Image 1 (cartoon, rainbow, N blue to C red):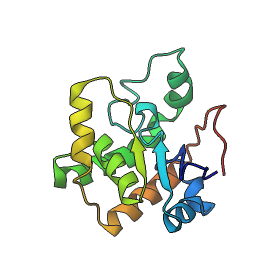
Image 2 (cartoon, rainbow, N blue to C red):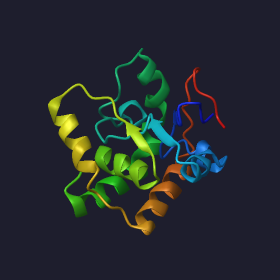
Image 3 (cartoon, rainbow, N blue to C red):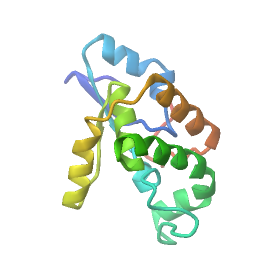
Image 4 (cartoon, helix red, strand yellow):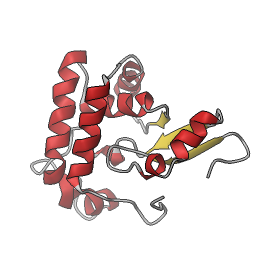
Length: 154
């Protein structure tokens, strides 16, 4: 859980909030323990880049995990796009801003300068409580649970 080095890192996204529900996130906040959230973008599934017309490559781990769920993610991603219009931000930036608003320090995988710049901009996005609540409700309503073999539900 929260370790010796006063930090922890757990899967935490709009699709997987078990650390929050189990009280781990609050415990870390109350005890000044940094909570590093990873999988915030669900390996790209919450970026808005992938959909039924543009799925992940077939036969890959990401494709196997997320392609069957892309249709279910549409409403959530559409809402992230709608919220993003207020900030001129992408769904990836909104998902990252959500994780920051929840008091976590997101770990974002990047391989392009543009992605670094987008992640930096997400720090300046301040979501309203209503937007956060709506995103969480829509994330829950997807019913998508894609934890991989190395991850455990809390």
